Length: 182
Image (tube, rainbow, N blue to C red; front, top):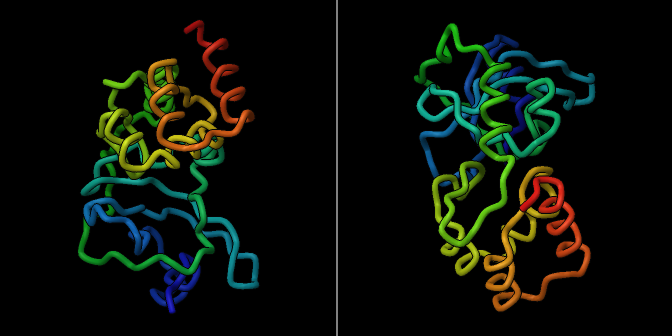
C-alpha cells in the first residue's frame, strides 16, 4: 500500500523540509520539497512546498490554482507518494517566488499551436503535435482544468481528428482564446 505525504511526515518524525515524489511520475528527477504540513487529525490535511527537478524549482504545479496562490501541494492525501531520500532540500535560495510566478503566468498566457512546446506537467518540454497524437485526452484535460491553457485552431482540428471532444471543451478553449486575443 502506498503512503501519502502525511504518512511520510509522521514516519520521519514530523520534520520539515523533506522530499517526496508521486510513485507514478516517470521522471525520477522530479520531486517536491515539502516545507510545511498542516494535518487535520484524520490522516490528511494540507501540505505546502515546491516541485523541483534535481532541487531546481520547476513549473510542474503551475497549472494548479491553489499551488500558484499559496504553494499548496496538489493531492497530498493520495496514497501514491514515496519519500525521496538523499536529495538536496534547499531550493535556489534567494529566488523571488513572486517574480517566478509572474514569469510563469506570462509564459503561459498564450495559446499553443502544433509546433509549440508545453512547459508544464507530465509532457513538459514536449511538442503539442506529438502530445495530441500520443495522448489526446491529456490535451482535453488541460483545456478543461488548466485555467490559462488553450490551443489554436490547427491544433484543435488535429485533436478533433484524434478523439471525440465535447462541445463544452471546445467552448472553453474558444473562450480562453478570446481572452488573450488569439
